[in-house]
Structure formats: structure tokens, C-alpha cells
Length: 508
Image (tube, rainbow, N blue to C red):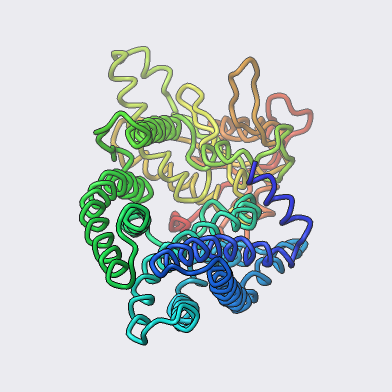
């Protein structure tokens, strides 16, 4: 209910919402000041008129102090509102506004607490001495008695300021980048726990001592203050320490484990040591970490069966479903004489030999920036220029083809590899249906690459490329034309060329 009210006020008042912060903090502090005056007056048999005058005096000083403190931090609030009014703030501006909003109250109290309490307590105590016709030594008694309520009012006012700042923080948090650099700038949770219960217990003890004890002057007032401070601190200290340990230690375990996960250690887990909300937090973190670990295992397995660039593209979700038309170079490799070899060799030996060849061929494709589109029996289809667009895709494809042929020959398997390269426009995208998709390239240029590889049987070359590929080369590769050869499925013969000379170095 209160959050809805403050959100509406924040939207309606805009840059004037800082007045709500000031009024809210002042109201809490004035309430404590009024109760304090009533307690002090009860020790000196003061009249209602005197109590009213002292209460008014103390309330005015409190309001002035809070208002001045709010004015000193108004510039920070205006900076947050400036972010709110910016049509399209940058990520850096958003993070800066968030840091300002979340630490607004903390900065206000760090900057002003040292003077606010003396500003209120000292004049109010002096006025009380004059108003109640006390001795000058009683001034120090009144100051001592006001210290506990002043600290209590500071804690309450701080809490009120944070609560009233929620609309600002929530407004920014909606668009805060997930990966922004987080820095702990606010009041630590441990200090909140240690300070809050202790202050509350001491203030409560003072109130009880004033209501139930003797109230006959300064001596009884001093005794009540000293007794309440000693009893309150004695009762609250151990409780505050135990409470701080019980809350902050489990949170710290989760924070450390999250840092390990951020560094890549997905096996990090948090021991579930309680059955409360903190235990639930640890349990949920463990479930999240296990889910991330399983996802990473799936990603690793996915990358084994799918080219790593394609896997990254698919997982990013940025590739259009309808595919894109791009110009690429296609390389088709085939093992010469593999059919006759498979007929005479054991099946296990056939698979082992084929895997041995592919274990050499695939890394070479990767080195040159291509990706393996598919394995076709003893053949391999690789694409250069999609999904990553390389302007020198023809050079990469030719260099990879020549290096694969040389590497396969060096394996001494008794088998050789031939390659054909063609360049043209294709449609690259996800092909399939019913939940089974495959990233591939479709087009006549793919078929031509396969036919060009088959033409090596006619020309006796290890590598053949088309004129379209030769026209796209940016490096000086010696070529010799093998003339126009008929290709299956093509109405007209197609000129093919064979690269000569030493194999070029792998592309970086």
C-alpha cells in the first residue's frame, strides 16, 4: 500500500519529490523529539505550557536540520530525475543514476549526521535548563539524556529515507543492464543488524525506566539513562552478533559461490544449512548452478556435432528464420577409392580410417574460417563466408582445399582426397522441420562444387576450382585451365582450373 502511494507521488511530483523525502524523515525525527521532551519534562515536574514550548522548540530545530540536510543532497536527487527525463539514457548514465539513487540516503547521513544531532540536542538542552529553571550542571544531564533518542531518531529517519527512495530505485532498476559493474557502496547488512537492534533496545530500556522508575530530578534521570544504556547494550549485543552471523554468513556463501560461477566454475555449490528463507536461497542457487552446468554440457555436446560458429549463431537467436542470401565459396572433399576400400576392409577399420581423415580435415577448415556444413559418407562439405562474412572467402576455400589434400596424403592411409571449390550465391539458414533443423546452404553453387570435385577424376588433379572462384581470388595463386568439362545436371560445360605451386600457409 505504502509503495503504491510513494510511486504515485514520485510520478506526480517529479523533481519536487525530494520534499516528500524531507518531510518523511522530519516527521519520524520530530515524533521521537516529542516523546523525548515528554520524558525529560516528567523528571522536573514541568507544566503543560513548558512542555509544549520545549517540544515546539525541539521540533522546529529538528525540522530545520532535516530540511537543510535534504537541501544538501538535492543536487543528487535532481541528477536522478535528469536521468528519468532523458529520452534514451546510455547504459553508463543508467548505472550512474542507479548508484546515486541507492546511496542517496546513505550519503545524506554520512554527510550530515555529525552536525544534525548537536544542532538539535545542544540548543534544546540549554533551552530546557532555562525553561525549567535548572542548575547549569543539569545541562549536561539533559544532553546525556538526549543522546540515546537522537541516535534512535537517526536510525528511524535513515530507514524512512531508504523506504521513500524505493520509487526512484525501482524506476532505474527496470532498465539497468544485467552485466553492469556492481560495487558495494551502501550501508553493509551486518552494520544494519548490529546497529538497529542495539539502538532499539537501548531506547526501549530508557522508555521503560522513565515510566516505571523514580522521576525526581537529574539524579534519577542520569540513573535511568546509564541503566538503560548498560542493560540495553548487554541484552542486544550478543543477539545482534548472532543475528548478523546467522544472516550475513549464508549470504556471503552465496555471494562467493556466485563469483565462482561467474568465473566459469559451474560446479560451485552452497551448503544448505537451514530450513528458512536463507536455506531456500542456497537451495535455489544450487538448482540454478546445476541448470547452468547441464546447459553448458549440452552446449559442449552441441558444439561437437555442430560447427562451433554455427552453434554460437543458433544459441544467440539472432539469425533470421527465413535465412539470408549470401555469396560464399563452397568446398567439397571426397576420399578417392573409398568405396572399394570399404568393401575389403573391416567395418571398424573403415570407421577408424574415415575418422582419422576427418580429424585432420576439420581443423584445417576451422583454421581458414570456414565451417563444416555436413558429412556425406566419405565426403565433406564446407562453407566459407557464412555464417561469418569474409570478403576473402574464395582465398580461404582454395587454401583450405589444397592444405587438406596435402595433409590427407601425409597420413599414409593408402587413401587420397580430392577437392572441388565453387563460388556463388546461396541461401543460408535453418533447414528442416518437426523439431529437427540443420543449418545449411542451399543453391546451385553447392551442387556445382560437388560436380567440380567429381571432375578431378577426369583431369587427374587433386584440386579443381571454377572460374567464378578464380575471379574472386585476392591472392596470387598460379592457375592452369583444364578447359570446359561437362558437369552432371548442367546444360553447358563449365571451365575448371587447377591451382599449381606450393600449398599456401593457413589463414590466420
